[in-house]
Amino acid sequence: MKALLCKQYGLPDTLSLTDVADPQPGKGEVVVDVQAAGVNFPDVLIIQNKYQFKPELPFAPGGEMAGVISAVGDGVTDRKVGDRVLGLTTYGSFAEKVALPAARSVPIPEGVGFDTAAAFLLTYATSWHALKDRGALQAGETLLVLGAAGGVGLSAIQIGKALGARVIAAASTDEKLAICRANGADETINYSTEDLRERLKALTDGKGPDVIYDPVGGDYAEPAFRSIAWRGRYLVIGFANGEIPRLPLNLALLKGAAIIGVFWGNYTAREPAHFAKDVEDMFALVREGKLKPHISGRYPLAEGARALEDMMNRKVTGKVVIEMGAKA
Ligand SMILES: NC(=O)c1ccc[n+]([C@@H]2O[C@H](COP(=O)([O-])OP(=O)(O)OC[C@H]3O[C@@H](n4cnc5c(N)ncnc54)[C@H](OP(=O)(O)O)[C@@H]3O)[C@@H](O)[C@H]2O)c1
Image (cartoon, rainbow, N blue to C red):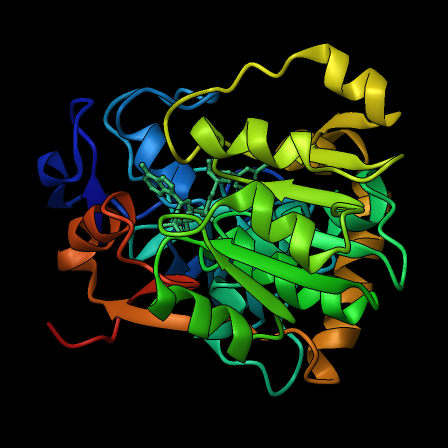
């Protein structure tokens, strides 16, 4: 089979399409013939050795995919050859086949395509866990989403709306903000051209947002946190900007506010039953049409590096996918 391999750590142009042996299913594993793989920011980090998880070289990046099971290992009783599944792999999905524990695969609901399935779980389940479980977002509260047109950002907008919140989306261009509005945002802020604090004050009658969802970090974190409402919850999702902000703790005291870490990958491993319930609840909203990934680009496997470059260059909105059948 072909795989897009990282043979030495570096930028996306160092990845190479390589023929490798087909994976065999180990005990408790399934092998999936990948139809589509979702691209996520951690893929950009893992190939540069900047991610918390460090696979041995060489490896194919790609943390999630959807496809059809082509082999099952010993001890697998609840999956069979021919099942349509999506799966979480941490790495390995940018390949024609991938082996993973059967427990990390999820049957794809009827009517959901491989592209949507591959673009769904990592971002939506992160935002679901962040907003519902960690942030306790309530109907009628105001949610601010930074980096709102990105993968986790757009999913946070849709989930925030599904939970009954008023959603303010902040992003760097008017084109990105138009996509946020099309995905349900009530209000928007262009943080490249507008003053974040002033706009937040104006949009919330001086009260500030109840919950802040921050996958960006860098320079936006402090003005956002200074604007948070009394009893606000600041969700630390990620640092796409590359810089980990340092927040003065007196701000937390003054607002009776909480800074809350979100580590979805660890949550799925430590609390699998809780995670399985999340998936069930989210798929119910997928069937109702309330959650739907916005797929802005499709790349063949041979051009997977371009997908990662576009993500690094802030060109991606919502999700992009690598499709085995996509045309160059
Ligand atoms: N905590 C968790 O469990 C968890 C789970 C999944 C992902 N994450 C993290 O969440 C972050 C976002 O992931 P994603 O897949 O949504 O990425 P994404 O689609 O690339 O979105 C990130 C957004 O950040 C903004 N940004 C600002 N500076 C940037 C820079 N220098 N490079 C790239 N983007 C920049 C961009 O929006 P503007 O151009 O509008 O500013 C972009 O849309 C990553 O740090 C990822 O590791 C965390």
